[in-house]
Amino acid sequence: MRAVKLVGPGTIGLEDVPVPEPGPGEVRIRIGGAGLCHSDLHVLDAGELWPVFGFTIGHEGSGWVDALGPDVEGFAEGDPVIVMLIWSCGRCRACRQGRDNACQVTGSRDAAPTTPGLGPDGSMADYQIVPARFLEPLGGLDPVTSAPLADAALTPMHAINSARRHLASGSTAVVIGLGGLGHLGLQILAATSGARLIALDVDEVKLDAARRHGADLALRSDADAVGRILDLTDGYGADAVFDFVGAQATVDVATGVVAPEGAIRFVGLGGGTFSYGATAFGPLPWGVDVQSSYGGTRADFVEVLALARAGKVGVDTVRYPLDQVTVAIDDLRAGRVAGRAVLVP
Image (cartoon, rainbow, N blue to C red; front, side, top):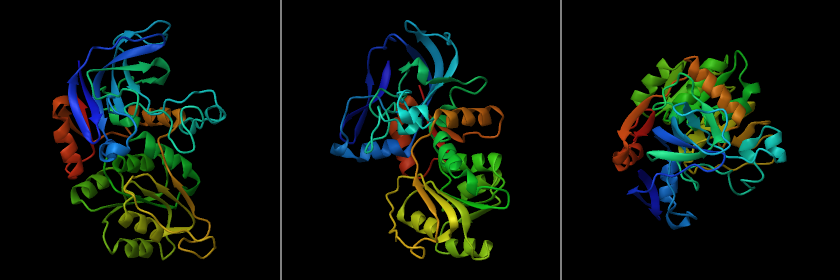
């Protein structure tokens, strides 16, 4: 079979490898689609700082059950399934509390929990081996285009759920960046909150898509963005801000528009920073709740899948054959992907 491997620092290769056999408790998936994420680019860009090589990349995967290992129950060959992003232990204190994206066993204070395609072999291949407990049934969803739900929808879902108390009717939420995660975050907010939604991006095509996906206002993210949002909120600011870019320019917008006792969720990996003062009148208004966000919980994932099955959330996809992975990477870097790139074996 074919597999996209991280073969060395900053280098991937499409290799021919043996078809893997599932062991006890494992399932072999015939991959229908594998999403390509900006975090895959960060793995490539980490170069020699990335600690392990030789694995198959891709942490968004869906397809069909192809073979069952011993002791697997609840699945049959041919079932459409999607692979969970977070492979937690299920037994530690964090997992028992429903915080499996903060697993104490497969993750740590300095490392995220185990994620396929970031160590264990991932989904950019013809087949993938997955422990059965990390699969969810797709039902009637398309196993090709549903793959990005595993991260591009799950991660916004978790960020939004963590700020849910700020999203009551009459509130204002700002979504910055309408790419792979942002266009799904906007749909989730439209489907599950009563907030007025203001979407920001530098790309007019993505702003047009945002209007179709439920944005009340879609504005260009430029030097005037902060002033316009403050004007729209009578100078008070937005109750919740979701930054799906994380670059310095978007961090500056997020901190510049958040309201007192509001929430900021930094989801993008753009490397921006801000200084925080331990005072009620510092760079942020008083009481602002700030979090960086990683992945999500199984409960978040179940909620995402339910929204998708109900037709309330859908992934805008651009498909590439698996052997065109480098083309997809180049297009993603250049901002030419509207929505999510999906590699199809």
